[in-house]
Image 1 (tube, rainbow, N blue to C red):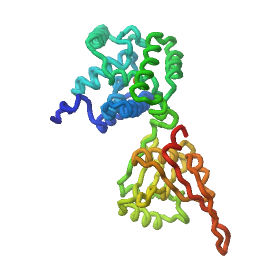
Image 2 (tube, rainbow, N blue to C red):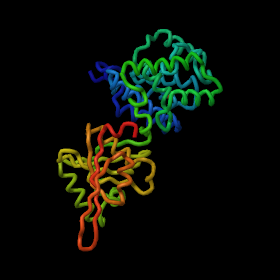
Image 3 (cartoon, rainbow, N blue to C red):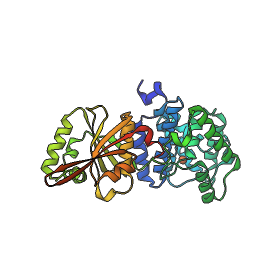
Length: 353
Ligand SMILES: [Fe+2]
């Protein structure tokens, strides 16, 4: 039952796949790691809209180039990945390592150098001839064609980029990729780039709900979150954070950039519309879209249709950039006027923002 997930398909679970990728990247660092993460993200999104298994799609996307673990090879990464995944018993992932580079089921359409041994070439030829492509093979072929290391690319731009780097791009393969785009758009009933959030996905960032209280109560977390506190002190921060941690209606989310925790968002879900209680990004990581990414990802993860926040003149620019609409209120006090903004963002407004 649980031996290599036989009853569930022959591919690892998400965590194992992520670990395999990290380990492989350690051996052969390069942009292919984030390219793989982008492919995984796209595959998951397309699978979700297209009635396929999103977890399987994600894992297969993440591992399609795992053959790069063994060094900088062209066609060789295909046979390396296939043999490696087979050796771990992940036959489905092995198959994707093999099929992802041949959307025409033909080894001669390969874009790149034929740097394989005779034996390896024969393996690819035989396995390719045996394979009957299914939607997962097609899905990863498409995702490979739109995934860059920095994020999702326009399919034409990406193919042109490959053409520039390799000097040539098989026209049959080019057209087959365009046909795949159309095939999956039909299947999803949705524009491809909208489905994969082309302009807002960052493979180097991850957002998750954080329950690591040791870290959340640390100086490191304080240094980030202090930016959104009124008259911050470490004592005030830890008192507040303990309150958040003990309140089941409050969610604390963290954004990691390149594996380093760089942003915190605190969400209070006790009211009708969830409210952002605080959001802050570490000083060294500001200006690269982490705050906006946190807001979007949290809304998606929690299936929030409308999110609200209260803010002041200092931070209103950030909320407006995220697409929030705001209402300004002023209150007169003895020592001056206090300006506040009540901000709301609906999930519809985040599309294309
Ligand atoms: Fe790839």
